[in-house]
Length: 273
Image 1: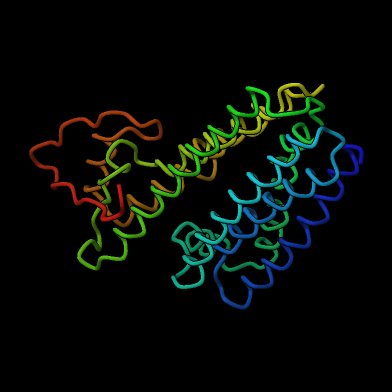
Image 2: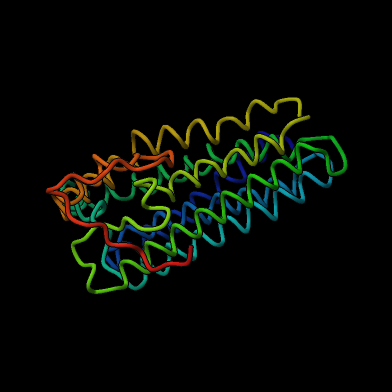
């Protein structure tokens, strides 16, 4: 199948998924479902492009398995949070800003279908890779994927365990990976996209795979990730989060600065380390 047909196929799939997500949001008044649908859509994009791509078997097989497992784990993790909890503060603020307009929410969900297509472009490059066998680049891609998904899973578990403890209400998670980065889950999510850069080496348009890490970094750093998350944390945790911002790197893990005398003592996550 040609890249153009693959893009069309993924676009149709994305619109269908997001339409279903919008309808679920209307019934449950929880726009967090958009994150579930986006992740699932990108994972389906990986599987569909792997099945229809003209490349060698091994890069396509790795694409389907790694992309599918990554998306399945993350979508399930987000779904549990959406299903059992209140609407995320970011979407509550958006709902209030839009006065609950379903037309604006419909356009918002539809835009996510476009993002599914955008983040499927690296998969199209991988699926066209003609190099057979397990090359060093494929091994590197597999290693990046293992580190990234393991790191993101650990960060998610640590934060979930912290939030599950009622004694931590209003406090800031600063244990485990959250001690060395304010957003370790975002860091490992960004790292994960380098998997497909490595898997695409050998394809005639391997450069297309760089869309993944470049665009993901832009979104996480300046658009829909860190800015909204930190604004919500400042609203709910105030000075405790400001101290966390002062002492802890924003995205890239590094040694934290000493806490100020006025800062509250860290409360550690209870996830496995």
